Length: 70
Image 1 (tube, one colour):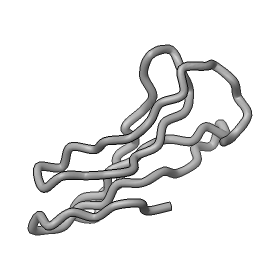
Image 2 (cartoon, helix red, strand yellow):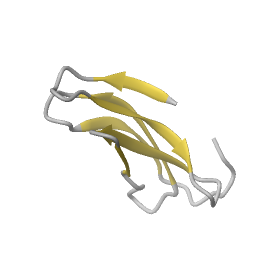
Image 3 (cartoon, one colour):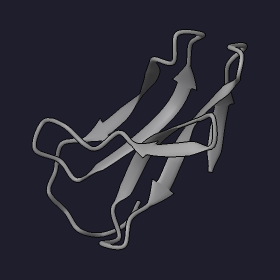
Image 4 (cartoon, one colour):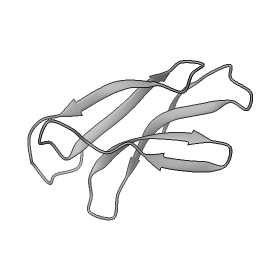
């Protein structure tokens, strides 16, 4: 799912996708390439909800290690 787009040239998109391991992961799509931004703080899930014109993504990370998709 795409949640945000910026005004950069070329534009970039932030959002969330699901991995083959059933984890929700924040991503940045830029110039035809989708990058998994991973999860931090010991969790498995992350979501990208905003992106600025420098390509920095703001979002949320789940700090639990649950394997259930969100």
